[in-house]
Image (tube, rainbow, N blue to C red; front, top):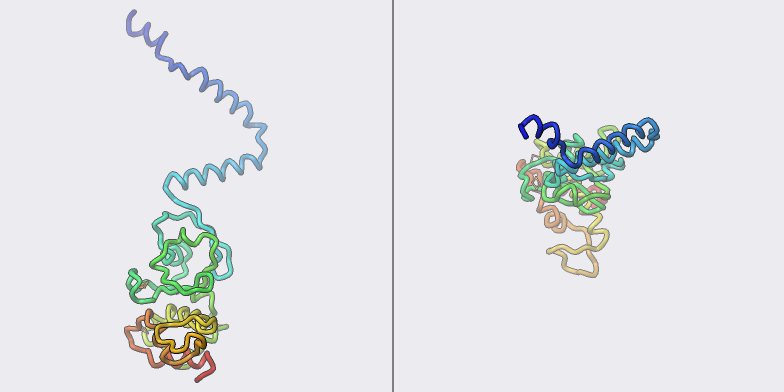
Length: 221
Ligand code: FES
Ligand code: FES
């Protein structure tokens, strides 16, 4: 048997008949596929492509709005907010959990957004400085920072304000700190503020004015 004979008679893959018949079945059925089914298939294909890249779908409520992202699982919450949602109010100071510039409020608790992965917050409610208030309708803590000059360059300020808002809630809820004297009666004081805000560094050293702003919001000014 020469080479041409072999090509004519044996180069077909044994599965060709099956593949052709599947193609024929799909081709014949395509005209009858309802639009809804095609849309569902398109979504599955998108999800598949996303999964192929190793991305994971994450749904969060950010500043009251439902958002859905397809993210590399290594994406930090800070990068998801800044790079994917363009919420650049939260700042990247150290990216190592040392400065507090990236502080946001997640499910009512302040956290360093640079130290947590976005995929860990699927379903969570996230509040950034943009969600606390606007220049026209400032949150009382934002207004107090303005009134008391609680900043100079302003780089640490979004994190300071988010931390301060959640910190007052912690005192209100009776969560003790290292300087709390009476664990049965957690109360506001400048010492408590300094201790609880010690994770938020201000290179401009606006600390006295930051404490004054927080004291004002607490109604102790
Ligand atoms: Fe997150 Fe510094 S940027 S703690
Ligand atoms: Fe400049 Fe705090 S205001 S770092």
